Every structure is written in C-alpha cells, then in structure tokens.
Image 1: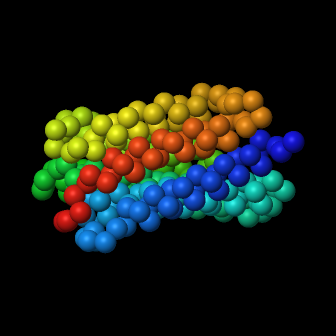
Image 2: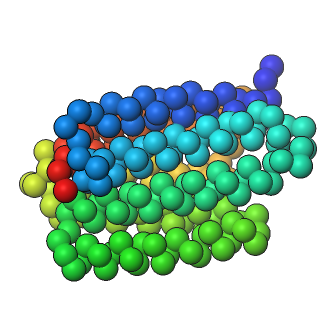
Length: 208
C-alpha cells in the first residue's frame, strides 16, 4: 500500500493538472491582458504551479530526505503567496474602482511580505494559510456585496466557502480520509471545488 506521502504527491499532480487545464480554458480568445478575468486565470495557473511543485517535492525530495526538500518548500509556499496576491488583485480589479482598488492592491502586496518573511526564516506554514484565507475572505465579501453584478458569483461564493472549510483541515491537523492522510484528502476534496472557482471567474470582466 502506498504511503500517505505518496498519496499526497499523486493527488497533488492530479490537482495541478486540473488547475492548469482550467487556467488554459480561462486564458481564452478575446481576453485582454490584466483584465479581471485574465488575472483570475493567472491565479488558477499559480495555484496549479504550487500544486505541481508540491508534488515534485513530496514525490522525490521529501520522501528520501534530500537536501533539495527545503528549497522546494520555500519556492512552493512563495508561489502560494503569489497566487493569493493575484486573487486579491483580481477581486480588486473586478469589483472596486480607483483609488480604492489601488489601496487594496497595495495593502495586499504589503501584507504578502509577512508570509514571505516567515517562509524564508522558519518552517511556519500557518502564515501562508492565513494570507491565503485573507485573500479568499476578501473575494468572498466583495462577491456577496456585488452579488447582482456578476452572474457567476453564486459559484464563486460556494467555491470560496468550501475552500475555507476544507483548508481548516490543515491547522486542525485532521487525519483526513483513511489511507489518504491529511494532504491527500485535502487535495481530493479541492478537485471538485476548483471547478466552482473556475466557473465563478468565467464571469469576470474580460476587458481592463
């Protein structure tokens, strides 16, 4: 039987491929660069990249205690932070107008410095989860406030709430499903949820 670490790597690969596929669908013809929909597509791609980096680490480096494990952890977590920042930028561009938009983007960028500092100086993952959660809550609040302005908001709200619920497994150190372990279960549960996030982002503006 495969170990929990092996299941974590395998499920990470599947999740990453799914996210890359959804990001590819999101980068569709007629999409203007740096529009809210374009930035959301970038967000999906960054989360997919983080999943793939995590899979490589779990499958090759962490499994044998290789010295490359720590650098991979650092890079993976920084990519998660970048994906979270991209989420904040997408929400700001979609729902806010200047100068409020610039203010929240600047606050998001400054806030990202804290988890990056923690990543570089410690093995703390909680700061990454908190920053990622802040991005999700920010998008959730704006999605609810602007509910009638975006037909895809219902899917987005459901996706965010489910993501937050599933993400709570990590700080709570849930054992996950039998045989899969915590992270394998986390990845499996995210697979249908990211489809909701994709459909929610399909209704973002395609122009700047």
